[in-house]
Amino acid sequence: MVTEERVDSGLMNPKVNIRILLAVFWICHFILWIFGDMFSLLQEMNEPVTDSSVLIIAPTTAIVLTLMVVVCLVGRPASVRLANLIVAPVYLLFNIVFFVDATQGWEYYLGVFYVLFNVLIIWRAYTWPKAG
Image (tube, rainbow, N blue to C red):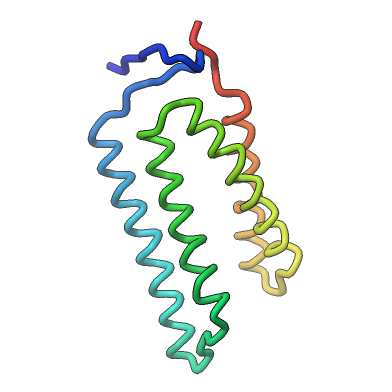
C-alpha cells in the first residue's frame, strides 16, 4: 500500500518502498559501472582521453544522472520537481547535440530514446499532481 503525506509545497509525496529504493541504488551503480567500462574500453582501443575537461565533465555527467535517480525517490517533492525541471532540459540539449552529430544508425536509435526520456521527465515534473 502506498501512503502519501502532505507537504508545504502542496505536491503529493508518496512513500517509496524500500525494495524500489534498493533497486534504484543498484541501477545507479550499474549506470556508473557501464560508464567506467566504456571509458576504459576507449583507453584500451588506443583512443586515450587526455583532454582534462573531458576527464572532469564526462564522469560528472554520469554521477549527476545517478544522483537524479536517488533524489527523485528520496527528495522532498518541491525539490525533486525543481531539480528535474533544471537538470532534464540541460541533458535534453546535450542529447539533441548528440543526436544531431550522430553518424551511425545505433547513435540515431539511442538519440531518439535519449530525447524521448528527457521530454517525458520534463513533462511529468511539470505536470506533478498537487495534493488535494
